[in-house]
Length: 204
Image (cartoon, rainbow, N blue to C red; front, top):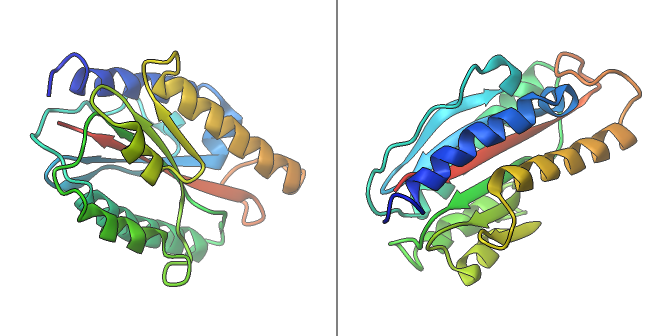
């Protein structure tokens, strides 16, 4: 994969995403962010956290061709763990959100769809997420369309990943604050809804 369109685009998007979210206290307090990267395998690069407590997002290194199956399998495990941990501390968690950012096509097509279906199985996995998919460089609209459940975008049409994620986070935050209690949003109050958000980035 060419460095200018692929990994470079991802590394450029990460600090932009960090700046957009961390600069808004309302969003960062309600929307906890985790980071998962993937290529042949998937890795949890940053566990769920408030981005205002993060000095800088970790950088990515190219790791070869990418498979989608492992990342959807890991994502299901991470969501299960995070939601249960937050509930243990009395935090009200609404449906998890996932921002899936890819710069190419999967090498495990169509096998990855089995892992994706397991993640999105509303009967077997009640914590299934809302997914926003964003493709840059070599990603196809048809593949991105299969993944995104509440939004699917292809870069190059004037929409940047950081801007897209920031606007989505604002929309989610507005929906929580308008329908939730009239208290200052912060995860330490059990009555305050919290959105767990995983940013999934391809590192090829």
